[in-house]
Image 1 (cartoon, rainbow, N blue to C red):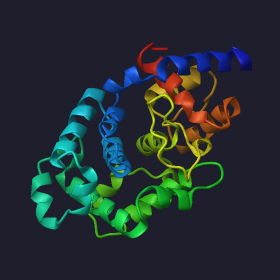
Image 2 (spheres, one colour):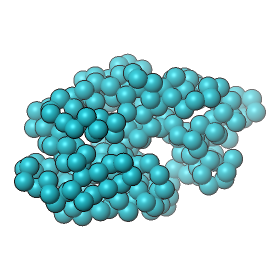
Image 3 (cartoon, helix red, strand yellow):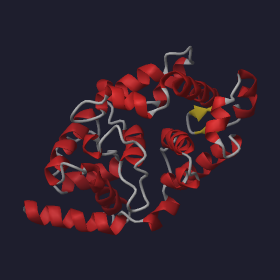
Image 4 (cartoon, rainbow, N blue to C red):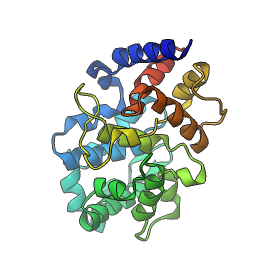
Length: 254
């Protein structure tokens, strides 16, 4: 395909998959249970944190998380005390366990109390072109309390070469507009043009077949390359093509 054909093809696939009916089988369905900004942010962040493996398993574990927080994540976090850690101790999703969860709850409480939430941190560290350095800086702030060393692996760091798929996905949820009823458009201090594609095995495979990506590894350098090419297609909203790449990979086995 030439450039125009490629753009037209991907725009068509965005229209096909950027639809609310796909929400039920996607982890983004969890934050869609909520209306309050802070509840959406916190449920979305925790869901994205455990978003690896089978999507049904992710949704099941994220639902369990919300049950533990009595479906009031912001209130739960702000009222959290160490003596509640026992109620979280049995939670497990793959390598993320109750010890990790307890720290994540404490860290989120600290961020909302000290910095006013998640959005101000990313807005403060955002660069003109992307949010990859902001993710690195966010991780530093997130782990500034005493923490179990094992928990640091659950937030990726682009500066160490990671594609940071899960947190890029969370940022897409928070920042892209909500005109389709899919993403939320909650954060106004950061622009969709600064987002990076949540690169995974599916979107990476499709991107390579379409000539949008040449690097073989799904890492930070691959994200930068894909960013560059998606921004050529739509500089204002490059990550809308995540719907096309993911849909082609998962549903059409492209």
